Amino acid sequence: MKNRLEELRKKKGIRQEELADILEVSRQTVGSLENGRYNPSIILAFKIARYFGMSIEEIFIYEEE
Image 1 (tube, rainbow, N blue to C red):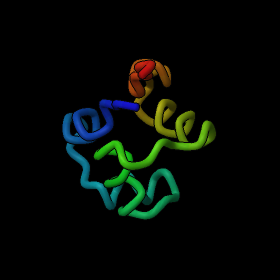
Image 2: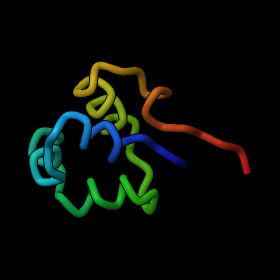
Image 3: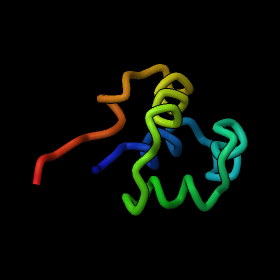
Image 4: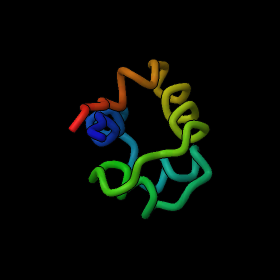
């Protein structure tokens, strides 16, 4: 699943470590999310969407294979 997490984080001017603290996850988790190696749980997806003031669908792009 693709996402706009890195773009949105950089637009807000925060580091991966800062976003990780806000979301209560590790910096490695944020990095894995940004690189598409890890898909978030629904709870984490909601936390991310709420933080950026967007819907989950605006951040995470699901494409059928």
